[in-house]
Amino acid sequence: MYHHYARQFPGYGAYHPVHPNWQQEKIPGERNEMTQAQTGGGERQGHTHAHYGSTTCNDKHNHLHPGVTSTPIETQEGHVHKIWGNTTFDDGHIHYYEAHTSPPISLPNGYHTHYVEIKTTENDGHTHTIKGFTRASKS
Image 1 (cartoon, rainbow, N blue to C red):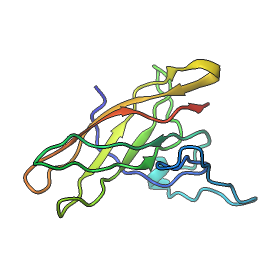
Image 2: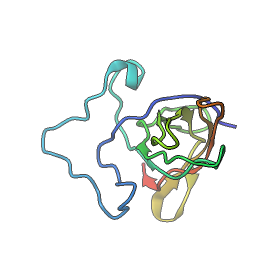
Image 3: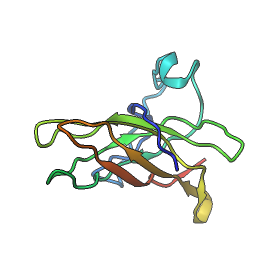
């Protein structure tokens, strides 16, 4: 499947993970500032997806993983997105995760989503798994 490690960064126009009807406003003339390392060598244009949810329950606890994907990365199978970041701090620790999503999965009205399955880094003697879909977006 799509098991890779990556980092997350805040995105432009992202949906808030707790309030899905809230959309971050763009400030006229402001750009989404990302380093070349974050964009893979240059600024990319395109949409992003919010991702959020809970990890599996291991060692009697779980973590949340709110974030926003990268802009699209073109592949032969269709575009994918990179997600990366740290889980929430629970049970005295965090976990790092990184992944590339699946290619787009079509939804009604021009929207699409992506599937992701990630194994977090080991910390405190255990790992967690993140499985799920990104928030729907238009290309």
